Image 1 (spheres, one colour):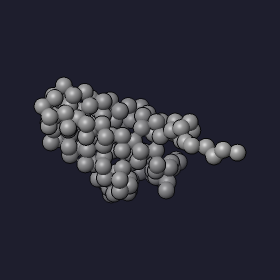
Image 2 (spheres, rainbow, N blue to C red; image 1 turned 60 degrees about the vertical axis):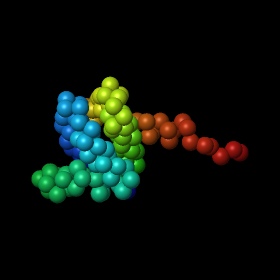
Image 3 (cartoon, helix red, strand yellow; image 1 turned 30 degrees about the vertical axis):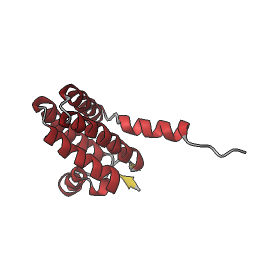
Image 4 (cartoon, rainbow, N blue to C red; image 1 turned 90 degrees about the horizontal axis):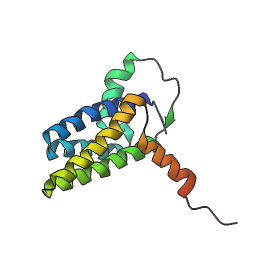
Amino acid sequence: MEIDPRGPRLGAVIAVVVLAAALLTQSAWLLAAQVIVFAVGALAGLRYAPYGILYRRFVRPRLGPPAHTEAEAPPRFAQGMGMVIGALGVICYAAGVTAGGLVFTALALVAAFLNAAFDLCLGCHVYLFIQRNLRVRPSA
């Protein structure tokens, strides 16, 4: 499935705000809410991701068509990475390891910021690296 790449970028902008608030407040609940958003995008698909719905309903109608589209798989994989990193942060907070919660929240924040500010999707690059280098190749 092909997607408008501007949607995940808007989602990254919103995630930056949520993750920055979670980092500043050390809120496991706010981080957990962002993990749920990541989980929906990763597991159900970007079509059902809450920030994607906001983009399609309120932003996309005001823009022209995208200059290009991209495959859904890399940004969906990136959502999965955000889900795992954020979940580790929630687990650390719940276990009373605040430093771990802060580190994992900061990691997710940095990744979201790079996507939002520079259109650099770390999870997408990891996905493409795996596809190019780590897949099992059939033997001849």
